[in-house]
Amino acid sequence: MWNEIVRVTKFPGVTSAPKLQPIETRLVMLQTGMRAPMGIKVKGQDLLKIEAFGLQLEGIIKQAEGVKEQAVFADRIVGKPYLLIDIKREQLARYGISIMDVQQVLQVAVGGMPLTQTVEGRERYGVRVRYPRELRGNSDDLKKIYVPVAKGSPVPLGDLVDIRYEQGPQVIKSEDTFLIGYVLFDKLDGFAEVDVVENAQALIKQKIDAGELTVPKGISYQFTGTYENQLRAEKTLSVVVPLALVIIFLILYFQFKSVSTSLMVFTGIAIAFAGGFIMIWLYGQGWFFNFSLFGENMRDLFNMKTINLSVAVWVGFIALFGIATDDGVVMATYLTQTFDREKPTDKKGIRLSALEAAEKRIRPCLMTTITTILALLPVLTSTGKGSDIMIPMAIPIFGGMVIDITSYFMVPVLYSWREEFKLKRANK
Image (cartoon, rainbow, N blue to C red; front, side, top):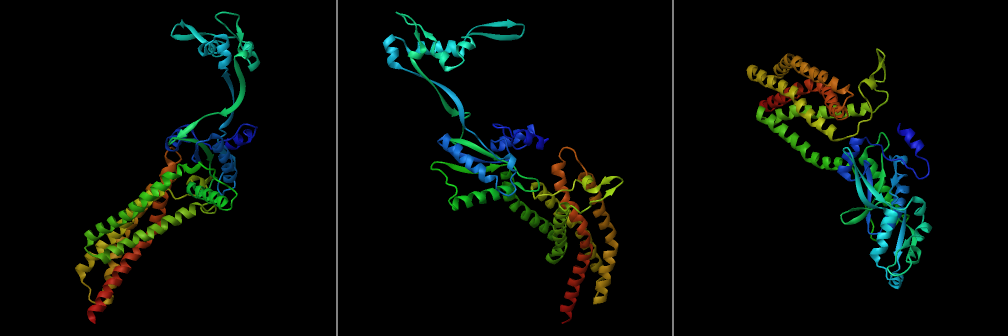
């Protein structure tokens, strides 16, 4: 459908626009004031300069990497014909006609004057009187309209006014006390909005530095769009993610009363973190899971495509951090209990105790991981409303929990290594 719209809108005077659904358009306009996910606001005091600079930006942005060329469009601000009627005050004085008399004649002849209203059931219709179209269709016809004179013959309007056409603005928009024009654009599939905007910014700066583009005096431009949500989210997440990791570590410390044990459990977060990114990378590879089972392609079933980092992905990582420590806590708790009970005094005893504790707790840990993975499958295969948010959130959790299985071996090995180190120091 979008390609067909682009093909049809190649007619002169008609342009395509970034594709948005009606509700999405309203949300985007509330956030940015524009009917596009990305754009540039050109501000100034002169509409002609704003339009000219916007057209220059339009040509440059089409060359930026990741920008959908068909969707780039700068506002055509000035170009609508206006019929201007300038009243000759000297002529009015000669005939003794007031400005109000001329304006009233124009109102009745061109605009129409409401006389009454008809009532038809619940409907109301205004009755207006004005000249028929053939007597007001162009400027020459308007000049033939007669204006009554109190003491004398009526005078043609053409003797009292100058009538001419001029180009003027199609629409006047303002923001922050400045006149404003928009340069709208959209991204190609497979590109992140932030990356596309950064590419466009770099290209414009390059053109300015090279002298190929000059910003007129009194004109400023600013990139805006929904990508700003991502920038704001990155600033928030730069605080939230480290804070979540610190809180998790403190909870582990309060549980084990040992920094080293807490760090052992904390290694599960690092492993899961890597697994989440590996799964995001695999989702973007065309060969991954590209086979059919029972007539259903696995990539289509699991909605596999390129996943860009977003707020939803980072929320999924934060949830993964909490889940990834569960198995480590179970394993480390039983290791601590086993060593407190058996109190091994040699290296062989330490390794046997670690192996015994790991064997007894690997099944509960594995069941926890499997149930978590199975619970995510309906989310990964969903296609309804909200799936565009839930799937990116579930992908890092799914990948992290699959890789986190290796933590079942990491924690016992690290625990045994620490106890052996303690034994070695005690024997010196």
